[in-house]
Length: 252
Image (cartoon, rainbow, N blue to C red; front, side):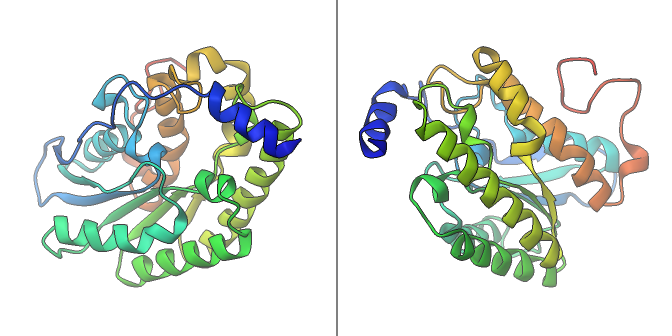
């Protein structure tokens, strides 16, 4: 039955209307050398489903970090649609190459959903993530990991398969958070933080394919990442105040 439901879910999920935007470049302004930022991971990091490049998590975070640091941010996005945790090490190599082997100051990783859908064992997934985070941290990089989202929020997936997806994704997310912390990184558990909100506002937070986030959905993800990113970089005191989240189009 679950196999049949997985086939049904694949038919129900629509096709993305476009490829992810190319967002590499320099963002913000200010004095001093640019902070080098790498976005790693899967389609969430790539921004598939966003209607505008400015709505992708990578760009929202880059602009907010630049504003808080008073320095430009040089962004390289090597996240790829369909990527699993096993591909992260190669993505790090690609990021270094794109930055002419210069050190990476900030790495933001969004990964895990494809590990669940491809039935990668959680212990294998977490071990691979921990190895990448450890290597980056030892190289002097600040690492923030957006852990696996709640796959139980994806409406085209029928029940009970959706319930199983929720359990597996939440379990992986918790393990990722622990592994990231042990490796010296900074986790953000999207599933527990945003799962109920994405489920309640699925029509707004998901794009036309009903699987990948919309522009608003990505901005909410950025909202949850930014406090951890700024704190990890020691920039929390410079964060924008005034009752509005950095990167968000909605007041809090």
